[in-house]
Amino acid sequence: MFSMRKPKLIEVKFEVRWITVAMFLSGIAEGLCINFHAIYLKHLGANPMQIGLTLGASSLACIFVYFPAGWLADRYRRKPLIITAWTLSVAAFSWISQSSTWQSAVPGFVFLALSSFSRPAFSAHLATITSESNLSQTFATIAISWSLGSILSPAAGGWIAETFGLPRVFLATAAVYIFGTAALIPMSNPQPHPNRIMGYTNNPLYTRVFVWQVFVLILIVFSINFGVVLAPNYLQEVKLLSLTTIGTLGAISSTGMMLLTVMLSKIRPERRISLLFVQLAAISSLLLLLLSPIGTSGKHSWIIIAAFLFRGGIDAVWTPMSSRLSLWIPPYMLSQGFSFRDTGVRVALTLAPVAAGLLYAIDPELPLYVAMGTILVTLLLTMSLPNYLPTQINKNP
Figure 1 (tube, one colour):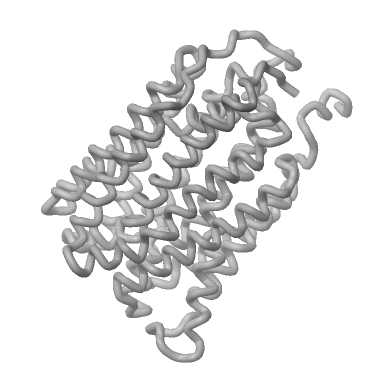
Figure 2: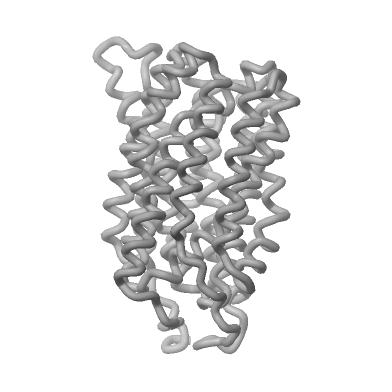
């Protein structure tokens, strides 16, 4: 295992408290519009294929920035990158809110995707200030704070959309992100870790075990997101739900994410069972979504509620992913290690909307069936992941 000097406990608690506030505000901001990206593009005149291409192209832009950002974060300071990324989010949501056509909104969605370039640095910073025994709890705390914020806002986003129009939803999101960015200012800005190898004779980012783990994690992200990327359109067009109802279901999904994240935080980060739980929740959500009735009235309306409670499992995947990989990356390469993961994840999130859009144009239910099939495959692949701590590799070659 890798070791490094951790900040004092009081300093860590203070810092995590402010990061938690920032993530709570980020949850509120994202919750306002998280269910309306695809619907807003449709509102601006895009068809399902164009929606998929727009969302996919936005993710594609990130592929070229994660590695340079991770390299810089490990050699210089991480805080400036994180603050810059959150500021870019404010600009992106503002741009989207002022768009009059789907083509003019594309740069805004690209900027929004690019604003996630600080994700590797952010994950690395959390891993740096957290003791190994508390990795799952820290990542879970951050995820839960985001989830709590996103529980409060989706219904409000639906109300804003129906009362003032969809552009005002994205403008409100930008406003909340301003306060979230301000909450990150007290975050520490430590010097980068000195470049020295501790415990590994070769670069750990290129070992067969690490690369296979990242590959499987990327496939998991692709499979669980494939079926839900156009779910808001499916709910509106096939299930005939209103924007307000879709927003409320988003809040239910956030509740499911929070509950599952709390459960996953109790599992040791090297155990693969947490990833299995996430995938089972995702496939249950898709199955219930197909079985749900049209509209929200009637005695079977609980099915759609249950579907979105399980839907939260998709967003809960970041806690086991981050805590697991933190164990396999040395301190001086944390940002680069997470950039390896996040670049692959962005490739998955680029392909998923495009493929889902093509299938949705044929049959709106087809992406759901294909997604369930791919999840069954990734469930089997997950069983091949190591179920032990990395120090045991040298003990049992």
